[in-house]
Amino acid sequence: MNIKNVFNRLTSNLSLLRLAVFVMLLLAVLLIIETATTFIIPMIPGDSLRTRYLLNLFAESSPVLLGFIASVLCLLIVAYVMKMSIISKITLRRAGLILFHLGIPVMLAGYFAGKFGLDAEMHIPKGQSSNIIHTKDGRTEMLGFSIRCEGFDVIYNKDGSPAEFVSYLSFIKNGGVQKKSILRVNHPVSFEGTTLYQSAYACEETSIIKITDGSKTTWFKTGPGDEINPVKGVTVRTGQIFSDLMDTGPAVELFIETPDGSYNMWLLKNLRKIIERKPDFLESHREFDPALVKPFIFMLEGLNSSCTTGLSVRKDPGLILAASGGIMFAVGIIIIFIPRPEPEKRRA
Image 1 (cartoon, rainbow, N blue to C red):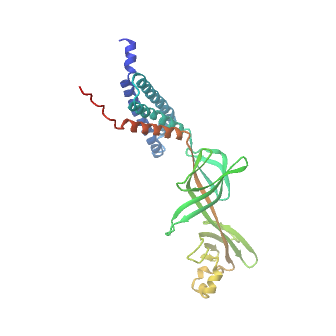
Image 2: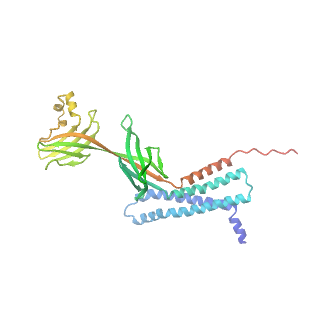
Image 3: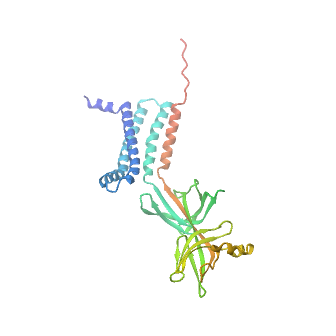
């Protein structure tokens, strides 16, 4: 068979289209396998080392394989579009077909460009700044700028559940604040191509407790579960901390171990005001008596609240390409299916 005829047959519109469809299906299957692999690997028993090794090897090499197949697909589609444009008269419908087919490789280019983007997390305590991020694969990297959490608010529903998290952020570069933004859930902010999403928060209450034993007075700062030893043989563990316990104000639960026994008591910051309203309060509620454990007197001086905001950090260099490809794809479909008037029949 003549080589020229074989080449023409292989490069015909129909052959190019069939080959492009086959490569597209192959790419789709590999993408499904790659996605499934990320879920399967953590489920493999620790003793199945060979299986885990092979799946990890596939997961590490799959971007190169997928990139190669996607490149082949793009070349086939471009070749098909060029050949169709050369041998056929360009009409509105064919222009739609060209846009439709070119949109596919542009979207693929955007998808694989996104593989080289950034998907990480960072946590910043209120009043502090950071430029350290933690990627999904466990690496630690640094941003080209710092982010300071100026403040953090939690807005609650009537039932007490969190309704919204709000972070007040400053973006710092070259020694100065370049931008200030308010970050809310589902309302991301961007700086120098990096997009931040409000993903989590953590607030911790700490209490300042004053303990007097008759000879000296000591102040301790404790959080839930912390233990302190005011004197040898006595252990005080902090339990729950409430900013407002049943409309009585700040309160702290204490578990106290002494050589004489164990005690469970509560400290109320507004105890004096409560006693003024109810003089017999301590007689009926001994667990609120600051002098419950002799010879100590426990007093709650105040509470400190410390919040940390959790941010998702994203950077997708292929977003514009993917969006452009999607627009080309959609416009091409619309053009293809635009109804056209039938040509008028000529009278004999």
